[in-house]
Length: 449
Picture 1: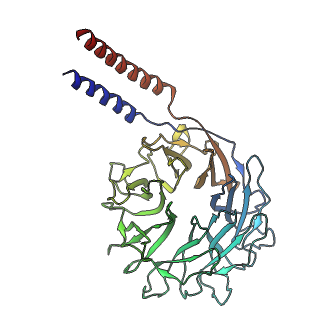
Picture 2: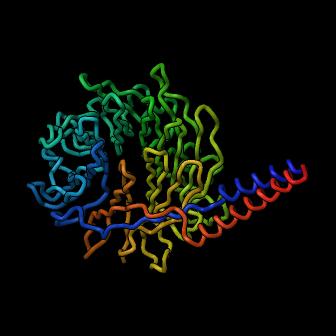
Picture 3: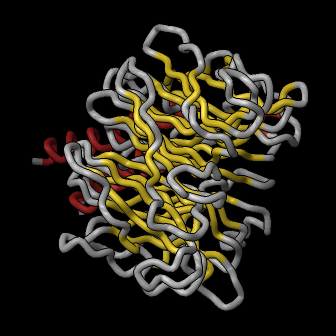
């Protein structure tokens, strides 16, 4: 009987620990304008962090500065620790048409690699959208652009880039060119470049797909395996779903897996990370009413443990009462997950404009409560893109409407605490009470003996 009581008490203690809610307690620096030199709209940033905690940001802008003219171009700046932002640089120096959908990544030598889609007719690319690539060694100039989609005769969509532990560069994008018997629908293509080699021929990722595959995102795990998520209209109705695949050891792509299972709404904007135990984490935007969450758009999450099936879908935006969009997920060195998105909910008595909201999840702990990052904004804040450095500091960017102009902002989040004072008191009191009861039972047991 006493053993059963002891086991019950230990279970209660475990449940109290497991049920405790993590509270996102960050202090955020005053937002600063990242695109100070901009004279027009600047937005849709891509970010990356190097091993020295230097934060790199690129964005699109149609300002006529640095001889860029008024078409859309890619600009870049970086911020070293304890220093100010560098002067804005023009990345797309040879572009004479619109540059869009940029993405950047950093290798072990602090070389910045950038890809984007562009309508400039370079190397007989034509005036349709093509994928270009440049790089910038530390404190050097940007390289000349290289046409990645040289085999394509169709229209290319937004690229995604990632770099593995050997500094091999991997790039994917959607393309409606009929390559490798892909047909004329939008399919995902893949190419890579070793450190000392050339770019590979394009490989078809979505083999067998008959519908448009778009918004593909690439991630690499600790064993250098490639993982891709994207959305695709896999049903005749045209409803979009989230799909996943990975590169097999034999160099072929695995059969696509449906992640947004049982979601009857529109699923889009996926983001993916892989932790050190090779668990796969995916989030996306969805207006399916799976959790009595209404028909507004919400943020869904799903996890797949290594070599197992996908776990049930979770609703991350459970406190949201309005539309959510543009989610992003990152993971830090301790496997803590961070998710940010734009939310129209009036958190903290704020108005109905979109604000950047963030939650996080330490390993083996529940998700935190949402925290509003853009508390000082009175207009729509969009497109959160961020990194977490080696010291746990969050570097957040977004764009905001100011004086009829889109402006790219930056704020730094520093961790304060994980559990609020009221909950800590309740949590500690419960644990202490159970330990007192446990000690009393043990003492009584010894007395009886």
